[in-house]
Every structure is written in C-alpha cells, then in structure tokens.
Length: 235
Image (cartoon, rainbow, N blue to C red; front, side):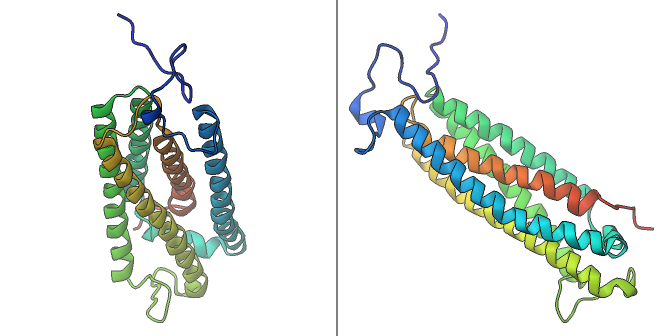
C-alpha cells in the first residue's frame, strides 16, 4: 500500500491532529501559521548572521587586494588536505541533517534519531580536524601576537600576520557556530528519543536544520578563500 506523506507544515487532509501532539502555541491560529512565523524568524536571524560573516569576508577581500604577495606566501601553511576532508565531512553532515528533517516530517522516529546522531558525529569530526590544524599553527608560532614567527618570507611578516589573524577569526567564529549547532542537535536528539516530533510537529528540527545548513555554507566559502586562492605546494 502506498505511503501517505504529510505535506510540510500541514495536517493530513480531512484529519485534525490530536491537540496533545500539535504543540500549537496559544497566539497562533493554526500549526501552519506557527511554522510560517518560525520560518520567518529563522530567516531573519540567518540574515543577521550573513551580515556578521559578511564583515569578515569584506575585511579579508580588502586586505587580500592590498597585500596579494604577502597573502599568497601564507598558502604553504594551509593544509589543503585537511581543509578538503573537512569540506567533505560538512557536505555529508548537510545530507544527514536533511534526511533527519525528512524523517521528522514522515514521523519516522528511528531514522530521525539515527540521522541526528550521524550529523553530530560529522560535526565532531570537523571540530577535531580543525583542532589539529590550529595546534599545528600554534606549534609553528603562526598565532598572531608577540611570539609570531614567519620564516617563509620574513619581509611579509607584518602583512602575513593580518592574514593569520583573519584566519583564526573566521575559522574560530565558524567553529563556535558549529559548537552551538552541536548543542542544538543534542537537544533535538533528546526530544527525538522522547518521541516529541511527528508529522504534526517538526518545526524545531526544520529550524535547526536551516541553521546547520547555513553554517555548512559558510565553510564552503571559507575553504577556497583561505586554502585554495594562491595555493602552491611547499617545496
């Protein structure tokens, strides 16, 4: 028998959801209205995040234009392999997050839990790899500050320090957003285990899914800017 799929944000045609499973707040008339309001709020929040990261991207573009040779000389210190692995990991996490949202929409409890766990595993792998990268920069004295050492091209020491400052700011803020995302996924996982989410109520899963996809997209821009532009293999 063909499977009945619940339209996103709508109750099944001809059926009213039981009051105890709708999670409809008192100031909304319908669950559809509640979902639309949540969607508007989340997209408004994501726009502010675009503005936040946009400032750092703009600073990067300006300084890269001003000091192209100095920025290009830093490429030997960027581990393209680790950056590429992290990119693949986040793409996989976006897939599992999308599958988690779909599982919630179809009231599939076990797949929802599974995909949330997989998404958290991928996010954790990303942070571990990023820690390895940061640690190598620390060992090589490439963290901006009094102990900063730049042996690749000493004449570019000052300008290269600007690049590494932007590198740590941009990847650090991205990692912070990843940590927040893992916290939100932990909340979803607990609620999913409690069987809170159904085809009638999956708004938190979809909203946090949007946040997770946004964080992944930010990295898609960070990877080529920090790792690939001007890259040349160390001799």
